[in-house]
Length: 91
Image (cartoon, rainbow, N blue to C red; front, side, top):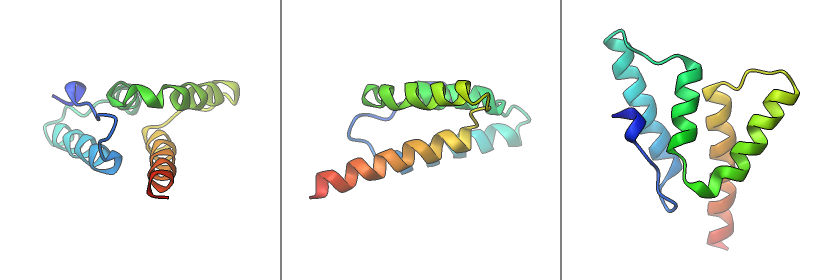
């Protein structure tokens, strides 16, 4: 179910991330929580295609800096971008 969840182009990113986190917590209670790496991949796959450039930049930066891209860091970066987009459309 979690892997099938998608956020559409006009969807609320915060609500989308909340749903994903809730599903992850439910799986954890059943002893089947995905690893952070798997959860990061699930998040990337659930995002609208308009976020592809940001995903490419974020993953490239992680590789260049030899850092592990965590799900929390990814969510924070995408949420920041979503907030910027929302602020621009309100102007």
